[in-house]
Image 1 (cartoon, rainbow, N blue to C red):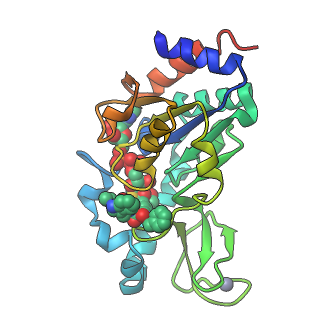
Image 2: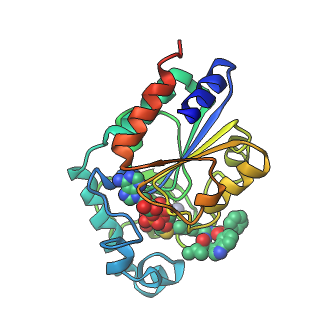
Length: 244
Ligand code: BJW
Ligand code: ZN
């Protein structure tokens, strides 16, 4: 396949690859996506659970939404798509930048060491006052307090209207890579959804892995259609077949 040859050439000449992942990569692990049938936004309203205003109005409800999802992490495992990206990192090391919109820890559990969580992480809590971030595996309750300043804690999550992480340095640098690949994302939430366009404007090669067309499909040069857990390992292993 043409895309495989193009990636092999980039790898041969020590080029860089950036991969952006979304909820679709964790779907085969049993974690619901946001949009589409059975998605989280079918059952919950964004304005009730995923905005700073919602947290001010009803912190118990917002904490419960994220506590439920943090508990779910105990019952899920990385799938072959997460492992394929870990193999890619092992092969090309710091020439891969993995950016995820996901707040689960499945990339890390598959062996990826350098993951940029632009929308935060379920396994961390943040102080609502001094912004200190601490590891957190259990539930967060309204009575939990920051060890440094004594104020309330919140999930370390980027809600609508808040600024995603790593936008100043790491993500702009990553968009200079020769290849931009998006896996399992609908392309409907900015600024992540704008990355493919930025890559295209810089004349980079763009590849989409998705079950179906996304909102950004026209901006991708190549489309790999199918479940990420099947399509991505096949593709990455073919690309790495000639890599020493
Ligand atoms: C499979 C599969 C399988 C399924 N295999 N594929 C224009 C420009 C900039 C901003 C805006 C703008 N217009 C509006 C905004 C504001 C807003 C926004 O984008 N709103 C849109 C709804 C229009 N953005 C924000 O508020 C962001 N902040 C911001 O803009 O700050 C201002 C600023 C930016 C930059 C500089 C300075 C200032 C913050 C966004 C925070 C998003 N938060 C959420 C929830 C919190 C995290 C959580 O609870 O988990 O993050 S929303 C939700 O959507 C979550 C996700 O990370 C995000 C993206 O969803 P994703 O991953 O794409 O999932 P789905 O479900 O949408 O799609 C799944 C895909 O997988 C589908 O395509 C399936 O086909 C596919 N799939 N199974 C392969 N097995
Ligand atoms: Zn604090």
